Amino acid sequence: MSLLEYRNVDIYHDEMVVLSDVNLTVEAGQFIYLCGRVGSGKSSLLKTMYAELPVKNGEARIFDYDLLKIRKKDIPMLRRKVGIVFQDFQLLSDRSVYDNLEFVLRATGWKKQRQIEDQIKFVLDTVGMSNKGYKWPHQLSGGEQQRIVIARALLNSPQLILADEPTGNLDPETGCELMQLLHSISDGGTAVLMATHNMQFVEQFPGKKYICDSTTHKFSEV
Image (cartoon, rainbow, N blue to C red; front, side, top):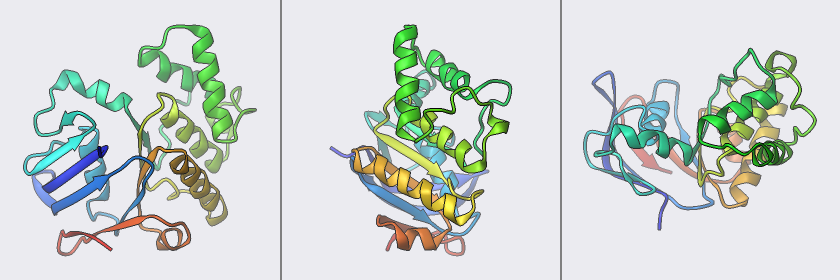
């Protein structure tokens, strides 16, 4: 059974159609690129997947949720099942890396301190940041901050990670390392859906490709 399925969906932003007739299926462990220029609708499409933007037509399902009918009270539970990686990190600057991660776990219902500690250790190990838990975000490089963001996305063992231009603020070498990390996560069975306009990475790292065309608003598989 697919994790996500869109059929004949139009994507809106501020009441304007930015992508039309989106047909997309995501299976476990897939690595999928959403390619296109800035403003082509990639971010808006991702936002519909965690109910930040509404889906108004067609068919749209993620896990067991119908995105056309999802109730407001069900959105937090949906978001626990999806790992989200933002371009601008969105780490809390007033606390350490460890406390950033603990905050998310407690906010999503984790209560036992030992389990919290074990899970934080696991995700930091996964992203190669096991010795950085005591650091504060401003003490980390951009690449290190993005690794912490990926660790945060992995906290609740999601089946799907949505990554919105995750290499956009990184130099090419650091971006390449992040791509390798995301691909290793995908190889482990977690699907990754990544929005990017960096075609060099798309060519370098294999994955299924879709194009978001900002001129025609078309969404198409390459």
